[in-house]
Image (cartoon, rainbow, N blue to C red; front, side, top):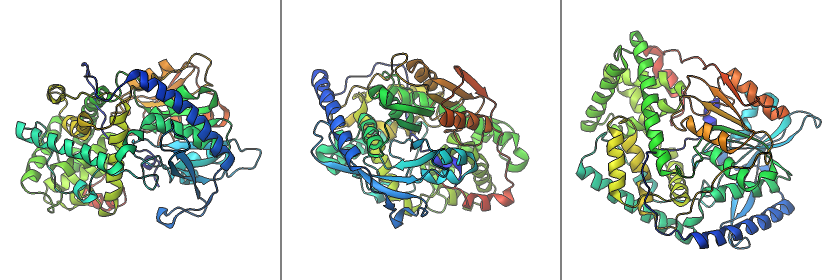
Amino acid sequence: MRAVALYGTIGSLVLSALTVAPATGLDHPREGVRRAAEDTGTMIAAERAAAAGIAFGPCAEAEMLPDSVRCGTVGVPLDYAAPLGRQIRLTVSMAGATGGSAERQGALVYNPGGPGASSLTFPMVGELAEWKRIARAYDMVGYVPRGVGDSAPLSCQDPADFARAPSDSPTHPSEAYKRKRIARAKAYARGCARGAGPALRHYSSINNARDLEVLRAALGERKLTFMGASYGTYIGGLYATLFPSHVRRMVFDSVVDPDPDTVWYRSNLDQSRAFESRWRDFRTWVAKHDETYRLGTTAAAVGRRYEKVRAELAVKPAGGKVGPGELQSAFLGAAYYDDYWSMRATALSEYVHGDPQPLIDQATPRPAGIKDSENANAVYTAVECNDAPWPTDWRVWDRDNTALARTAPFETWDNAWMNLPCAYWPAPRRQPVDIGTARGALPPTLILAAERDAATPYKGALELQRRLPGAALVTERGSGSHGIGGGENPCVNAYLESYLLTGRTPVRRAQCAPHPEPNPVSLERGAARDASLPLV
């Protein structure tokens, strides 16, 4: 298990400077009343959870977790304004602290992001060298958020339809193609409403933060020690704002911009812009190793090769399964994690030079994961659509994404299509919580960020530090991998370990040199390495 497997992706968030049209369904005075009722409901739910605890036992066989990991469930209200009403059972996993009783510091709860990702496998990281000392001190705790997996699973369409391949993915879509995607977005939003019914509105970030408070109580922890990556940092920021006196230690790894004016439409446009820079980093690295990959000696030349392959796959999908959409999805992984660079470059090179099989192996959706992928996408969509106002006028989306795609074509329109159901969302939209605390309200917290991270651009880390007085920021300079704690950089890991074990942080900001770039993989070895690594 590689450290990178810890981190869920945030999907495709996006941002630009524009005025967002008010969403339908918002009623601010009534929303204030609802939030007050939810605050009371959270206290009731936490008290019940503290009394009940969690009965840990063997994990379900389907989870394929080792015997050292135990599983249980905790009940949370579907609607915190009705805490005695319908309950959702969240699955929780735990590996007990491996050190002696004198070393134990309680539970470390981890959320990998998404929205729509599970951390059920997180306790297994205690076996990795980077985590062993932390695992001696902490019970390592993962959980399945609401809507995910068996925790009141949300579905918006038939998984077979969701994964139908091959798919198209034009960089600069025609008007006819846009109309087709608008219709698809409307149908998807209707499917979410059919699948969830009145419960749809309750899949939200603020409820995820409230669920975390109930989980803290169920674990018997007086205060929460939490690490969130990617979207998990947004949940952590909400928790710190709602329950500051319940925070013991908190790590924010690869930070979602918490500014309520960016959540979520503007933050998605910012993300697309950042992906263009990271895509250039990948192409520059491939060009530097042209002796291995033979795809061009400049980033521009590598880009032309990639676009030529996209065009070919639109006419003749590789293996009848990999079209431009599957290609794009596979290579988006290279913009998230640089340890995908060698395998993706090898697949592209092999295809260009006559062997499509590595690309087919890497880019073909795996049938066994289709149901989980559809579920994750449904939760992602519901949470982001419910969380905040979105433009409801297609002309706003068209204007902003058309303009952005002129300079950032790699991911812009794919991001837009992923989020477009929010323009037609049938459930009420909420106003985002203004994340932040007063000075002294929180103990020291730790922020980790890679300077060139595309999924969560670096300015989000700066914004969160501004909003949480006393937070320290550790920056991996010149690097862009998403999710850096417990990964490849010993400098970053030293700060993480020191904080979790002692509570000490840098005075305000610290810097780490980047971890080494990947070594190129020869064409002969590429296929073997490819088969051993997971797909994004």
